[in-house]
Length: 587
Image (cartoon, rainbow, N blue to C red; front, top):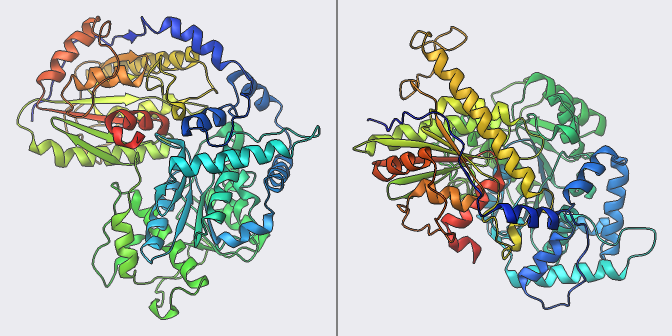
C-alpha cells in the first residue's frame, strides 16, 4: 500500500490566536486558591463537580507542597481522621470485601478484568479507579457503570456538609480532591451494599490514601516501572517498595513476572509483613487443556493483566466460599525466582465470559469512523508506551490491508507531570508517522461549562509551553532519524544489529511534519477534516489553517484512503478526545 508523503520541513503551528486572551484569564483564575462557598443539597451535578474542583491544588501551591512534603505516615493518619469526621470508622471498611490493586501499568485494566469476572458470577460490584476520562463519576462505579449524576450529587453534598460540620481550628476542613473522592467511594459502596469493592491505588501504595483499609480479601501488583519519581523514588526498586506497602499480614497477594530487582523487593516486603505472595503463571499455562481465552481488551500486554485478574478473582471467590477447591488442577510448576507460583487451574465459564466481555475505555481502544481509525491508549510510562507501540503496529498490519489507496499515520500526543516525555517520544518514532500533533489536555481553550474537565493544578501558559517543548523535541528526533537514514544500511538498527521486527514501511526520507494546537478540539478538527461522521467540532475553524504545513496536510488528510490516528501519552488527553468523539459519554 502506498502512503502519503509530504515534503515539508517540521513546522510549528500554534492555533492560539484567539486563545491568548484566554491564557491570561485562565492562568489568573487557575492561580487562585480560594474556596467556593458551600452549596445547598439538591444542587445540580455540575455544581457539585465545580465545588469538588476547588479541592484541587493550584499550580503554585502544588510546587510548594512538593518542596515541603510532610511525613507520609502522618498523611495516612490524617486520612483516617477525615474518615472518622465523615461518619465512618476504619473497621467499617472491613465490610466491603476489598480487592486492593497497585502497579505502575495495567492496574486499571487488571481491576476491570477482575470486576467483570466477579460480576459474571452475579455479584454486586463496586469499583474505584482514577483518573476519569470524561466525567468524574466514572471513578466510582456500581456493577461496572459510573454512578448516576443524581447519586453522585447526593453523596457529594452529604459528605461535603458532614466535613464542614465537623471541622475545628486544629485541622483543614476539607481533604484534597483525590482523598475526598476516596472517602466518597467508601460511603457509596457501603450504602449501596456491594458484595465486593475493587480499589485501584492512586499513586504508589504504602502511603496512598486508599491504604487506610486494614483487611482486604486479596491484593495484587501489576507490572512495575518508572513513574511519579518525585513522589515514589527514582529507581524501580524504590517504587517496588512503595507498591509493596499495600501488603497485609495474612492476606494473600499476587504479582506478575517482574525484573529481578523489584521482584526481590516485593518478596522482602511480603516476608516482613508476613504476607503470602504468589507469582502468577503466564496466561497460556491456564489455557492448557481448554480453548484459548479471548480478551475484551486488545494488546499482548493485556494477557499479563488478565492472568493477574484470574488469580485475584479465584482467590476472592474461594475465600468468600463462592468457588469449590475441586476446580483446581495440580500445578506442574516449581518455585521460580524464590516466589511460590499461584495455582494453575481451569478457568470457569464465568471467568471466560468475564474476560471476553471486559471493556475499559481509553486503553488499547479502537474507534472506526469511515476513513478514520482512532487508536486510543493512555500509556504514559516508558514500558506502557513500548506496549502501546507493539499494539498499534500489530493493529496496523491487519487494518492497512483493507485500504485501496494512500494511507496517513498521525500521532496526537501530550505528556504531563514529571514524566520523561523525551524518552516517550523517542519510543514512538518507529511508528513512522506522517504528522505529529501536539496539544494540551484542554477540550476547549475558552470553555468553562464542563466542570469534569477542569484542572486547577496547571496554568494554560504552562501546558502550551509543554506542547511547544514536545514539538521541538520531536522535530529534532525526526531530523536525526532522517540524517541517519542517509548512511545506515537498510535493515540495520542504529546499534548495528538486525531489527527483530522489520518496520511495516521503509524509513521516512524526510522529517515528520509536526504541528501544535491550543486545544484538543482544534487538533481533532484538523486531523479529521470533516471526515469523521460523528465528530462535529464545537469551535470555529477560522484561523486554523493558516500555515503551509497545515494547509498541505489538510489536503493530504482529505484525500487519503485511510487515516490512522494514535492518541497516547496521557489518559487525560485520551479522555478529552473521547469526550469529543463520543458525545454519549457526557450524558
